[in-house]
Image 1 (cartoon, rainbow, N blue to C red):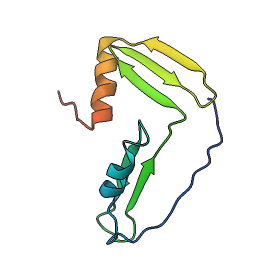
Image 2 (cartoon, rainbow, N blue to C red; image 1 turned 90 degrees about the horizontal axis):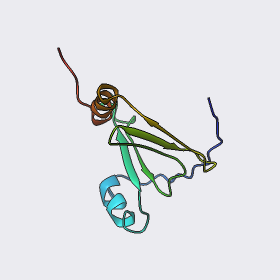
Image 3 (cartoon, rainbow, N blue to C red; image 1 turned 90 degrees about the vertical axis):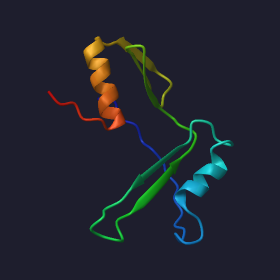
Image 4 (cartoon, one colour; image 1 turned 45 degrees about the vertical axis):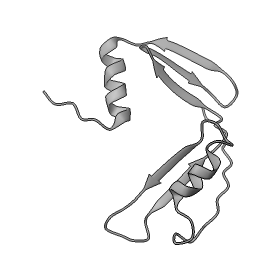
Length: 100
């Protein structure tokens, strides 16, 4: 398994002054491929986090059964997946559940 060291920056903001979605909408056109991730624990009010990610250093793409991974060092790997595996990966990523 490849390992890479990442550096992150963060800033705490009061939730009543700026929402994560409004902050993301302000930067998405400036930073292509930006991403908003939100988590929440409905059982605890202090366990909610939002992450806005800009300038991706790595990527994973599944398109037409072809899985492409680009690593932070610029290296790329590609692999063609079987249709059922590609579909299963798509369902997993989209949060869908597969039942018999």
